[in-house]
Amino acid sequence: EVQLVESGGGLVQSGRSLRLSCAASGFTFENFAMHWVRQVPGKGLEWVAGISWNSGNIGYADSVKGRFSISRDNAKKSLHLEMSSVRPEDTAMYFCAKTRFGSGWYYFDYWGQGTLVRVSS
Amino acid sequence: IQMTQSPSSLSASVGDRVTITCRANQDISNYLAWYQQRPGKAPKLLIYTTSSLQSGFPSRFSGSKSGTDFTLTISSLQPEDVATYYCQGYNSAPLAFGGGTKVEIK
Figure 1 (cartoon, chains in turn cyan, blue):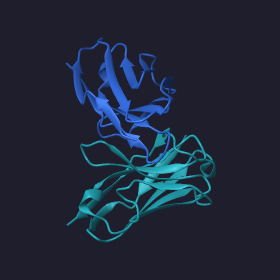
Figure 2 (cartoon, chains in turn green, brown):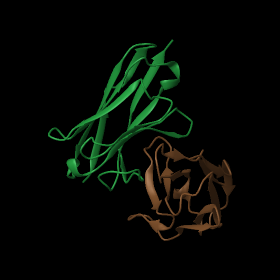
Figure 3 (cartoon, one colour):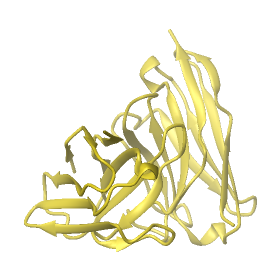
Figure 4 (tube, rainbow over the protein chains, first blue to last red):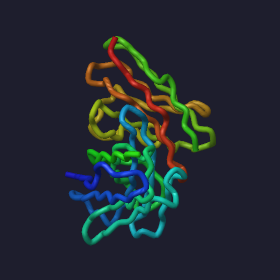
């Protein structure tokens, strides 16, 4: 069974940093591209960042480019999102999501339950 | 890509046929997915590549394309279908979601 478990969320002050993690199990993690998607409570979904199987292809939403950094550790089956210079508008539930492919930009066949990030001003 | 989804909400009776529309601001071929998100839960993949139904979902859900419009249809609405539905275009980065359609039972 595919499982994605996010961690690292919490309350952080504006301008500070936070590191989110996603632990994967139930599939061959190193074969698949992974992404972060966020959702402001009560609002819609927003793609944040994605990384190919070998970290060779990485992309970011304009809203986080230059502030957030996505990375992965295939040996530890983990995905990370380093968030720096956070802003109140970064307050959201952050979901880890798996694609069916190793690279490219596709849909998400499995999602974690999310970790909540709250940024105080 | 920008995805425009309509309506933003709808209320229908059990057994009704429900349609939700999504339009991209550029050609995305058939690279369109739909997700179902129940309250308090993570989204679930419902349909991919315009019309392929994800395993585990009943056949009353279907997807189609006509011109530049993509459509999600629920042929006979059931109480368990109460959720918010999102479309997603995925031919290139940045990936984009529609604004969502909240489906309720009348």
